Image (cartoon, rainbow, N blue to C red; front, side):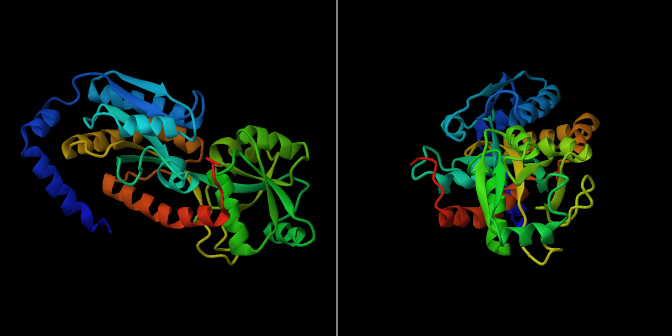
Length: 323
């Protein structure tokens, strides 16, 4: 599917043929930029927007302001960006929920992620792990066997989070019995795991690594496509006999769909260069985040594959956030 590069090149050439697009490329950016985040300050999305946005602002020689607009699964922020001028001065922090899950979670959305946004760049994939207490099941086989006599309780940061949907995918692929217990954030779920209120937690690498490194919890499985260097003892589901059982948390950046191709190309190049800087790469490695320098076309292909997997599953589960 990456053979679409010539099409993008053609679009860029067509955009350059118009005076407005030529000005956008030649003068961009000539005023401050906004990066809209649909979540409160202090979370992972906000942190990475500020980190990467700051590096990009230096490269673009322009001021950048991160605006937090939490509300309704980032729907408020998404609508604001979808309606913003398509000139490259309004960026949207995107993730699984905004681009992939929301069309299945809401009967009506004031934006269409498939047509209202143009992907610019990929920020990273956050590995997910199924963790238990040190005195819990020794491995996946013991964990699965235990659910045949009593359904396990599993905590996640929220309903319809990547963590929640990852475990529901595993339940369907493996046949285990497990009951969801949603929390308001990963740290709260981990504290209840340590306190014995839930049997296990699906946690992302950014929140979970400190617990794993200190051996306060143990991973019985990783939801990744291969073992991770940070938790090499955790087998992936394909090793356990369950192919195509992979899930990630992930983030990226998009702009309104009609943004001129030369502007998108400039932003993509600057974003890749910023994320590949030693400082940001060091921060990401410390959190166990996997990065790929994807072009806009490659990022779009990744999102399409995610849509094909998760939207049907959400509808099958009957999960709704607007009922």
